[in-house]
Length: 221
Figure 1 (cartoon, one colour):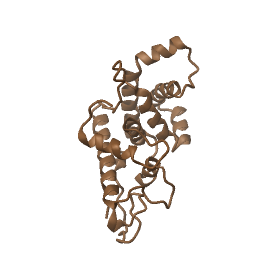
Figure 2 (cartoon, rainbow, N blue to C red; figure 1 turned 45 degrees about the horizontal axis):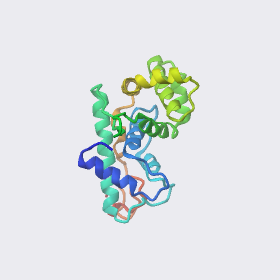
Figure 3 (cartoon, rainbow, N blue to C red; figure 1 turned 90 degrees about the horizontal axis):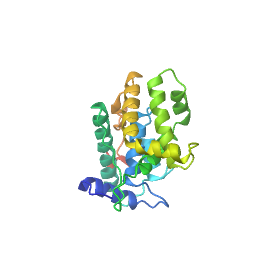
């Protein structure tokens, strides 16, 4: 991994320490969060955090110290806020790994994470692809082409794949900006990644609303 700010390195370390067979890498997490931000549906943090942690409903977050849960939620939410800010400016800054041997940007890992976000609401993404917003549909088609290449499922031949690879970063950045704009046109604000307010007060001994499974008083409460 190239040299990232310490907060990103700490987040990458926390991901690596999750007790999963294949925990997300930082670049995969970034693609995943971007998919949540630009996707056609509002997905509650309690759901997509469970996807990052690899837990099911009712299970607790895989951290021994509740303070680590709070730190992780804060770090991920802060990154979501940055993604929204950058997309709103039309200047996305995806987190990519770089092959230290040749300097090649490993965008495939990022789109793997994006595809995991799509898998949370496949029907909604399919509707977007076939919908009346042609700009969004075209942007999604470009991203889907990259995802197919990353998964070795592309119908393109090697020459066509090389052409797509040459413009992959430009297509990726352009596509997520256009998908975010489509979400705004549909009336879905980009601030949906923040932990949602609730009309009723959460008791200190109730499960935290972030989805960690930890009591509120020991987590975000």
